[in-house]
Length: 412
Ligand code: RNT
Ligand code: ZN
Image (cartoon, rainbow, N blue to C red; front, side):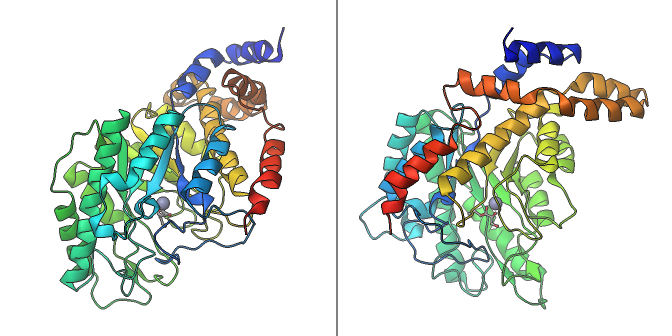
């Protein structure tokens, strides 16, 4: 009997169908963020602003579209399944000197070609940072109408681009709005900027698109660097805005107070929204955007998605950027960890555990959740890798090292 067959029997003894888990996982597309590959620089700016930061100077940052695409391809070749790529507006590919308010679908045609070749979907984000019109930490909430109008046009242009992605690829694109707006110190007026943000969003979202092609999300946050006291787009702001306007609220796991966890928010969001979106990240003491580990919170988050039967209702995207390690390894570890956490959740006897909870048999819940920890999870994961023709654990990092030697180390 193979190790996998043996593992299947052990899971079956707990009432879990490992075959079914593998099939369900195969259907899940995770959106891999392009910005891990170049430290969030993009192709239209030379500085990262907006209260987010990358640290480290590991060699091999992608400096242009060709390098970034090659690096992304390399990462995908090491990740089981077919996924999505998450782009920012700053990654437009063109020789034109086009500003962000004037972007059009054609400026992203090269990415659509890339997606078709790779068999992946695309997601999109307007870029409200790394630009001279981010003035005094404000964009859509700025008191100056001319500044707001520029960004409103950018927001509208971005939705059109996301719609084009959906049309071209036949996979719904997410358009996610995050703005860095806020103040360093305690403000004198909190409601004014929020009212302006609300009005700007209403204008951006006025045009209706077919939800088959694109869906909208708004991403809140607790604070950023230089924006420590007040964030205009807070969680409450966007949670209410999304519910009232029938769009998605995107929860970034790094955007809450340190002991607040997104795993506990998912069930509440799902009772009031048809869909949700996630940025899976790993905050270390703050919104530090470390590469996600297969830690308890990632598992708990995944358990919630599985228990709430929300895998097909959730746009799962990753959002981290570490410039101190090999960037292709960062993507690969993060994507594979997200999949591992989902697989772990799919291999949990959820029906039995729910029944025990409803019977107030909390002892069985505790025992059950602890005992599955020592089941041969790794054998099922290896089988998933084999079926998808990608290296099992222990065999992909040498491939990245080889690429680092051959390609990355030659970049300045
Ligand atoms: C910032 C937000 C936002 C960005 C990316 C680059 O705190 O998390 O999602 O990280 O859009
Ligand atoms: Zn995010």
